[in-house]
Each structure stands twice: as C-alpha cells, then as structure tokens.
Image (tube, rainbow over all chains, first blue to last red; front, top):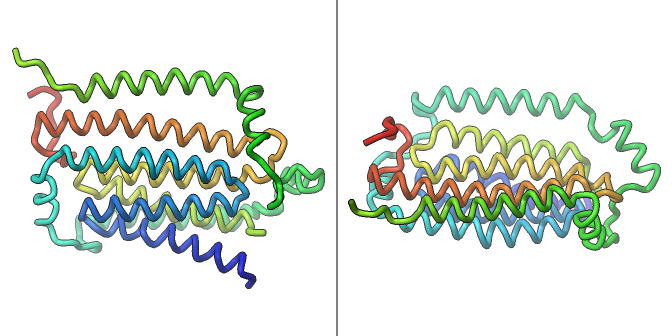
Length: 182
Length: 101
C-alpha cells in the first residue's frame, strides 16, 4: 500500500459514508451538508482519475451553485416542512422501507457482479489505448486539450447546452415567480 | 495507478444509495439530492473511463456536459418544488395527488 492508494481509499470513504448517512438521516439540513462532503470527495476521486479540470468544474458548479440553490429552496419552503420531518423517528429497517432496501441492495449486488465479472481493466480497447500512449499520465496537462476539443469536435453539443441553459434560466424564473392575484 | 474497477464499485454504491433515497424519502428536496447522487455516480464512471482517451477527452467532456445538465435540471426542479410548496403547503410527494386544486 503506497500513500497514493491509501489516499484514494480515504477519498472513497469520504465519498461513500456521507452518502449513506444522507440516505439514513431524515434531517434535511444535515443531509444537505453531508451532500456537500460527498461532492468534495467526488472531486478528489476525479483528480485520481486524472481529470483535474472536471474536479474543479465539480467544485465550482455543484458546491458553489447547486448546493446553494438547494439551501435557498429549503429556506424558502419554510419551517413547517422541517417540523414535519422531525416528527418521524429515524428507522432504517422499518417495514415501509424494506422493499426499497431490498430493491437497492439487490441492484447493488447485480452491479457489483457485473463489474467484477466484466474484467474492465483488461478490455481490448483499453489495452490498445495504453499501448499507443493514448492514456492520460499524472504529469500531463489536460486543460488545453479539453479547450481545443470543446471548440472543434464538441462544438455542436456546446452550443446546444448553451441554448438549453438559457431555456432553463427563463423557465425556472417563470415557474418561480409570484402568481398574480385575480 | 488506481484500477477502473475501484471507481466503478464506488459508483455502484453511490447509485444504489441514490436509488434508495429516491424511493423512500418523504421530502422532495431529499429526493432531488438522491437524483443528484445517481447523476454523480454516472459522472464518476465517465471520468474514470475518460482517462483512457487522451486525444479526444470524450469521457471528461461528457462529464462536463452532464454536470451542466444537472445544474439546469436542479434549477427547474427547485422552481417546481417552490411552486408546489406555495400551492399545497407541503413538499411530501405522497400528499401531492391532484393536478388541479
């Protein structure tokens, strides 16, 4: 075990344990802040997958944007929801949640089986890319290449996303406005 | 170098946690957080595979597009949740059973 792998597993624990706590807890504020920790852990995992630009994007958009948005929505939806939530005691293994637990656990078993049996690290295309040097090393600078690809190969999705963002902006502003009194 | 399998296993755990939240939670905002967890699991897989495409950066660029789409989705979903709260005074999805009041 080198320092590299130890830190990877630390990051994995930082990602997974708060996620499980979010599923367990019924306190909304606590789950929002735990989600914050999960997102930071995921950004760390992206760095381990040699995607530093995506990691920074994750922090800027998710932590800086989406989480603040969720906090705003929580604060605007008032105190009643919070009180309503805290009445119900936390029970993970109650009878009501048993089917959901069963479904997600079985799906996890299926996924883990598929992943372990697929033997992904020895796929043909991955071996070919490693052989031809088409793999990102730890010392590479990837941001330049991402910018060039975004403006050439992925120009159409880029423009489509810009139009979609404008639509989402106008649509959410329209939905969230105060209704006129008739 | 970390193997792909480890990333995929972490993604699987995150996805199933999100699935559990979407099915059980009694609060629309927590359901939204569950959906975000599932999206993040998918993005983690994209990024993990993206390491093996240095020339086109396909995995990383799809991850960036997914993050942007998730942001747009969240904005619209939160606007809908606010509207629902204003009309019904609750955001428990079990109690929202009418289209018209």
